[in-house]
Length: 392
Ligand SMILES: Nc1nc2c(ncn2[C@@H]2O[C@H](COP(=O)(O)OP(=O)(O)OP(=O)(O)O)[C@@H](O)[C@H]2O)c(=O)[nH]1
Ligand SMILES: [Mg+2]
Image 1 (cartoon, protein in one colour):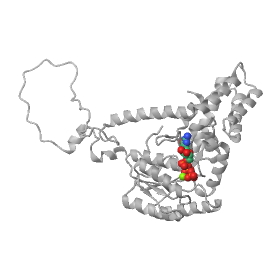
Image 2 (image 1 turned 60 degrees about the horizontal axis):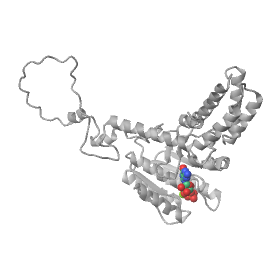
Image 3 (image 1 turned 180 degrees about the vertical axis):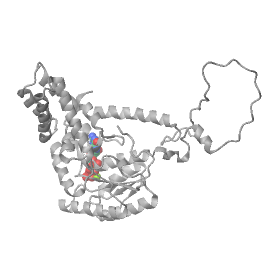
């Protein structure tokens, strides 16, 4: 699971606090020590003698960016964090797993053979997990082909085939949209992310979580409060900005969102910000207003920063299931969405919606929200998700 966003590989090292001791010494040569006095010959030890480089330590005891750590220590820390995130992700899909596994167990109990009746019931189980009708039918078609070719002969093989098919669907969607920020050259700044979606899905919360994450990675982050429709929207975002220590550009209610975005782009360029995250309204007087507004914002962004917005993330609430999917489709038409953030995965037993979304919207799921707290956001990893659903 890629845990870190646009990891600034050796850039923290610009302060040269993070390099192995030997290299640091190279750049600041110390005067050569006087030669040691001759010693009497000692019997030679059998094993060897490469001088050991002392573990790197800097005078700084703690550092958010890990400036005080060696590359090895950072890697160990990253691995530990990945494990923790993966455990939390598994807990977030636990309700879906329990429901899906339980149904499959009941379905498979006492059976040895795969017959049409079993396949019909399997169809129901998958649909109940919100995997979606179209997707379920496609999975079953693949399964039937496997049975006909004698590649699927028992229940284990059947389960494996379903898992593989789910994974293939999720992976196929990574070929569309923007599956990773690393596809944009690192010298592009600010990297502009627009966050769109209907009201209440978790846009503002997701922005707070993203801001925290990018900042912790050493990026200079700026937030743009372009939801000027509701007075409370900007206040709510201000709370997140303060909590994460990220500056916010806002204006009074009713200001043209494109104007707030314009100011934010200017400010981001002036400050040398690396990431600009843009909050947008979930509702307006009419839907066509909202869509026209999003289009205008995109034009303004493109005029000010080459290629911007680099990502337009559509936030979808997992709890709303198929309804959410329908609402999402309306955004796709105009907003030029490049990826999905699936929120509230922790609050549903129908987490199969992730597969329906990836398949039917043909967009990669970039992040998953797994709670209300600032660090309750994980990079969505298809393999981990599928393993999570089937309990291994
Ligand atoms: N359990 C859970 N709750 C979440 C998650 N993400 C957001 N929420 C909650 O969902 C509610 C709505 O979140 P907001 O961030 O205000 O949603 P929004 O899309 O900005 O809403 P509008 O500004 O009204 O369009 C809040 O109570 C959040 O705490 C999540 O991943 N898990
Ligand atoms: Mg909001």
